[in-house]
Length: 319
Length: 319
Image (tube, rainbow over all chains, first blue to last red; front, side, top):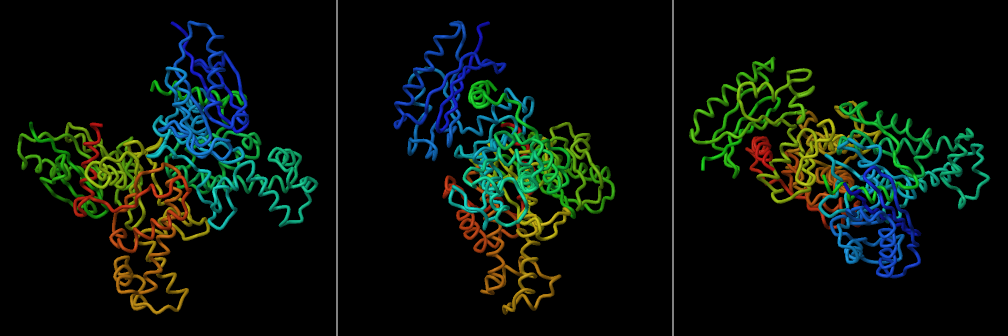
């Protein structure tokens, strides 16, 4: 039988990564182009298509290309569009799936990056065999992909699954979305940095983090300090997990998932994230859900996670 | 063609109602038995089955009985069980669907009452033609049924959709579930009564409600006072809607529904519930969802709503 391949495209603000994946998750061709060099989306798509074509020519001609899956910020699954993405140069509504499709006569599926991550975990990663789970991506913001009964939840408009913008405290921290107290202002790489700055201001606790200019503070530096036993850094992780645990208890009351998968930069601080988040979630949760919901790390290889997620959208078509 | 009939059973703490419904939602046979007279579930099921049999004998013999749908407190769809229902006399786990099935050789589907209500709205009521919506039942507590892509969300264990137990304030009102600050302690017939008692204590506002002993306060009396212009009663509705609106904004971020349907006793105070809840939800909601989500009343006839919801579980089998 000829080998089947799905092409995954991960569009980020700076770079766009291309990967050709087989059903087992092996990447047989890799490439990337700069996203931010193209002021116009059509020129970007032309360049992207050229690179995809080069990839197609370079692989075994017996391979069957099943389709192209695209993960993009503010991607809309139903319409195949990127809509008002703040980190991209293209403003308004970009019909990106149709633009790519005009170059290749195969299925093109587009969704937002967190939904692509959820699809990736289901096909290749920690959620294989699961039908109900949630993926939370802890990067600059907090993204999420919700899977119910083996399908990503898109909602009536394609924009379901924005847990980063559920409210922790309606008088709380100002969010990039214009509202106050969204979960991602507390629980994300940026969120924990804001927590440390707040703790440094409010307390006199001795901390190695006092030596770092606030503009240079990162979640990585907070993690390093916590590993060294810095109490303020440890407390900042605890505060983050307390808020995340409380909101995940709410999440369980919505879709009762078998597992919640944490992914992204902040989740790398594993020993300060997984156990306390689980503990706080259990404390806050309705009893009927007690000890049923796992909180686990992603099982996608970090360097290829985004393209594997995008490629997995194509395998999911068969279900 | 022979007429097809679905039997709906609504099990409540006091009464159990039986209704035979056709596909258009007409009830062609009605009956009821006392739930609370039976200390043992098997004796209850025997009596229920006798009444169902009488119904079957009384209708046109050409009718085809498609199945029996049951709505029950703490009902589990996957297992067909009633589990630890606080308002029923039968303790532990009752395999009710199997017990009913032993009398009738037809499909028996059991779910909790809020999920049955959601199914009823989809088949017979306000959600006809919708694939993504949420039903909120505002009775003694707050129940909910979430529909995604035309299917009720059950989650991995059958217990999804407990929005009444998402947290408004983790230091807030004590809930029957043993935790603090659950949504239903604020937003339900009981919740608004607690709000009025709190407002009466905290303020000196003149109110007709001061003349009613707190044990005799009901949401109906609060509604009557609000209609008369009683400011404290009006404020209590406003407070209730503010909390509901905020939490519905969160709900939209989960499953992005086309509509949220409010049902039950408290929703009857329509002029004090729908417009303010929508307004507060819009104020709290992420911009991408603005002006997309309707908040609408149930369209099931009140007296038959519960049995129609239960019967609709059987029509839903065909999808």
